[in-house]
Image (cartoon, rainbow, N blue to C red; front, side, top):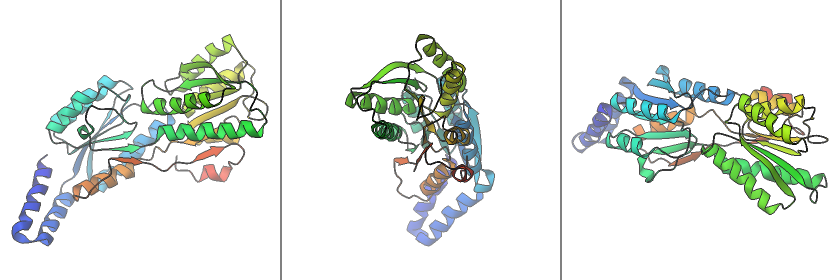
Length: 331
């Protein structure tokens, strides 16, 4: 808060001393005092989440001009709200958080707004009564990720001559009401409407973890093994579902077994893709730290910013992926 007031004072000084001097004062303030950022990470439930945390810590480092206050919410929204309130009391310059779910943030964000602290939402998006309660969102377009996956599946099934065959699908959902789950699930459900031969035989929450997905997939397999597609909403869930299916004697392979679709494109997930066990892996890029650093620096310079910044992402399938592609990845 104090630094922001100094920056404002620097701009007022331009009326008397000229823009060049004010810009120099602003630069001196930014260079001479670290930017204090409170960061509430939702948890450490997956390889993807660990990479996201490390990216943030590396970008918002002391060497880059920051003082980072980090909090691990252990996958509980109440812990995140408590952490954000503590950041407000500490009078940080910026608050950054990756929300567990989309809703329930209005009151705490109103407190941050009243304190004059910009809030940056990363990874998962949120829904608020007033968009002005937060400054910007940086992350993925989860609905588009899901659309990439179902379009690829449609093309694959057409190439296999299975457009009239009943396709029995299992959806292992992520944390319910998180924007990643909402977007990826919505894309699949919309595809079911336009493909009358697709049948959803089970839809269970795997909570984005390997252990939970293994558990729910095992329960599904106790009911039926007649499965054509397992749509897993992250890599951890895909690995757990594959573990359960292989134990039950099912083969995971798009040519003569179960077609497994996943999201994240972590290194381990891509190794499973290379081996043919994951047929398609849609990237969800965790390396968001540099984007946050750039955004904060632009705010500090008084530049106009985008309210939503979707990160560029790609996809990998088992027919075209190579070891070189995996080796070139940063996570």
